Structures are given as C-alpha cells and as structure tokens.
Length: 173
Image (tube, rainbow, N blue to C red):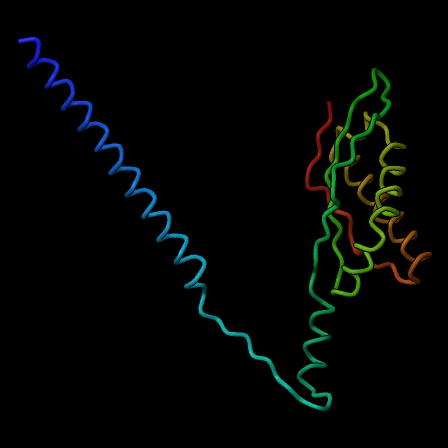
C-alpha cells in the first residue's frame, strides 16, 4: 500500500516537471519566432542611394526640407534645485528637451550641452516656488529659459539654434 502511494507521487512529480518543461519550451520558441520576425523581417523598406557627380535639384529640396523639421534634443539628466517661497522652500526637478530645426542646429545644441545646462540651472534656481505652482508661472519660466538659451547660443554660434525649451517632466515638492 505504501509502495503504491510512493509510486503515484513519483509519477505526479514527473508529470508536473514534464508539463513545466513543455510550457517553458513553447514560450522560448514563441519568443524566438517573435524576435526573428522583428529583427529579420523588418518593414521591407529599401532606401535608395543615388550616385551622381553633380548637384541635383532634388538634393537641394531635401536639404531645405530637413532644415524645417523639428528635432528634439534631450538633456542628459534632470535639473534638481531648491526654490525659495513665501511660506517655505521647495525642491523642484525639471526634465528638459530642446526643440531645434535641422540637423546642423541639433549638432550645435549637442556640442554645447554643458553651457546649456549651466544656463538653464541658473534660470531655474532664480525662480520662486510660489510662481512655479501655477501654469502661468511655469510658462513664464519656460519663456525665460528659452530666451536665455537663445542669447547664450547667439553669443557662441552667432545663431539662436534653439527654437523652444520644453518641460517634459516637472516635479515640485
């Protein structure tokens, strides 16, 4: 009687183990198939590469349209700072992206990220916590930051480079 119980328990353990192995195998196979389709099947679009010795009108049109496209340059880290208020000092953290037009401006903005970060932190730390609680105060801070960055970039590159400073994260405690 005891031997029969041990034999049934052993069979149950083996069948559970086998079931788990089958489920794991099926999941791995499905994941592998999905990875294959995403990586190797792609969208099927093939980019054309034209080889020409001269300058064509289409390349000029493409360059002018790329100058008009908006590109967003993310700052590498958020800006944490203390902001004084009437009742108390608050801790603020702002995540920023810069909107630029064209790849040349994108490269210029990326080249001067340390200067941009310093200027933004200077503008942000001069703000008042009571103003930052309101939408109007946030908009005013965004406008001040944009004006400051454009001024700094005009001094460095003789071009404003940055069209707008955008807040992608705003936390105030």
